[in-house]
View 1 (tube, rainbow, N blue to C red):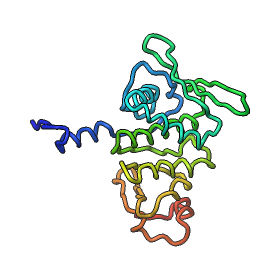
View 2: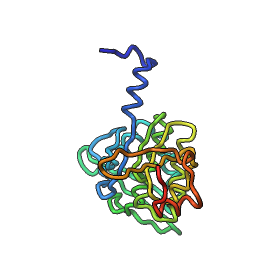
View 3: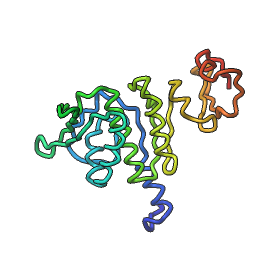
View 4: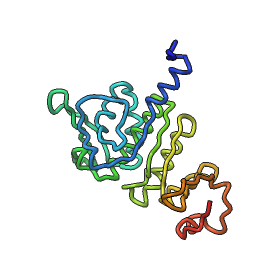
Length: 222
């Protein structure tokens, strides 16, 4: 058995990195904003988002600024996020919007699926900044996002991980694909369920014409 000698031990660093790995394939309907505790480890489906949000702000209070800054960019009328105590050790997230001195409070669970994904993205960005380096795998982050928002959504994620951490995302969305260079894009393909999946860098594949049109037509062969 190999034991960790100190916090600077490479084994400790590697174990910490593994523990903080973020793997997401969110199901927004399971993201209620209610929490019965705190954590820094989100569930893959996002069902414990309330606990993750609470844990992040409890451990890193300054992370609220990062969350708010991101959300203000995509939802300019958002004015406050409250995490109210509604019972013994139970909290519930409430989002407040404001425009022209008119206020509206909405339970987090009643936000749209896309809005919940914006919140999830904001916490991913804050996590990468405050307890980085973080490795994040997000299965189709463009799901539930309107076409006009996909580009900004994916670009924000990519930029956040430019200098620290790493993000790996899967997508079939043309806007999301366009936001990554050929050198940072892998193409996956398999001929049948009985054959292994083939993986190639997009930069290593010869494509005649427009990439998106070629993908739509299924003309990329590995």
